[in-house]
Picture 1 (tube, helix red, strand yellow):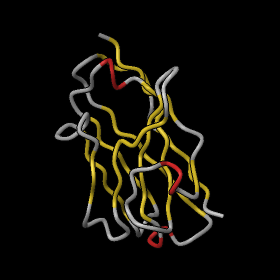
Picture 2 (cartoon, one colour):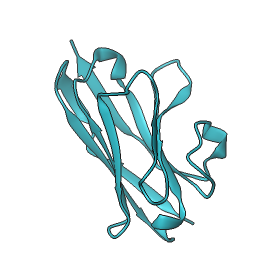
Picture 3 (cartoon, one colour):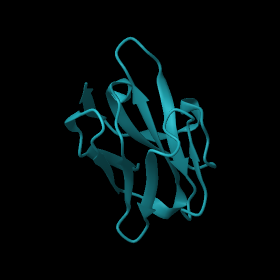
Length: 123
């Protein structure tokens, strides 16, 4: 089992920045492509972005492209999500997830999930 624990959520003002982290343990982190998803109240859980095992390839949803950056440190088994210029519509619970496959955009492709961290952006 790969355990994932998100941290760094909170409440910020519109336009501010926040960095989320996902600490992993239990299995070899570099064996997994990693994704960030988010779920707003009453909505589905959707991809924010993902990163390949090596970190050389990334994907971002159109809604966050140019504002969010995913990175990973395979030596420290951690995943990060730098969020800049936050908007009220970014308010959601953010989840990190791991897949033994590639950088997939569908949540059903991910094998392991964290418990999530709340991000609230006020206007």
